[in-house]
Length: 293
Image (cartoon, rainbow, N blue to C red; front, side, top):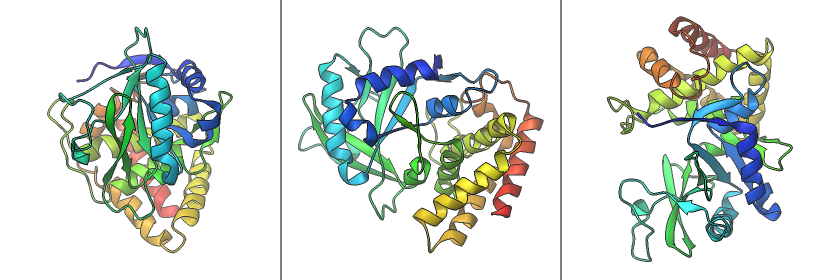
């Protein structure tokens, strides 16, 4: 399994914000584990989170490549070090899109081992699960990935005191559910047994809901409001289809709850030690919440 790190969300958000030029901060939304830790920082044990990557989603889609080029080059010039996986190196004009590495950068003189990764809001009409766009840096060509429902995750992102916006748990969960209405069965190579991708992502949605209920008795009303507003804004003519897709996505792990729970305990739920029975109850109430939309 990957070596996770206990990182403080507020400290990381502050440090990343300081490195993003003020003119670009409106184009950056923090998603993933750090966004989760920030949202639930008042829940015991959640101000820090077990992770090693900080996902920065660049938006709007039309400006994402230009933002990636400017931000990536600035971080490189400030001494941030690129991180590569699977033996990949920066590409050139002849490198196919699918062979380009994503840009992952670790801060200079960091002993914590964390890094930022640049992602993009999906272009309008993206139907494929993952889409790559090329962008140039002084090191060579990199790929900027976008996932088809990330627009859902960053809709209504909230401002922070650090000048960066952070995605809300309800919308990140909804993006995961929509993505896996057609479950992605690609094995996760860095997890024991190579579980299919959907078990981790849909399990993450359930974990976010578990945390939301720990945080507030009004979580259900908040989630329903955010989901309804997001679907109305982004899919005004497809709200019923999106609701059905979200339910299908959640149902995809019905036979994998034990596996999904085990993965969650090594990630977003690492500080909590949540029991499988409690997590199953959260799963059941999340199904019920979707039915109330």
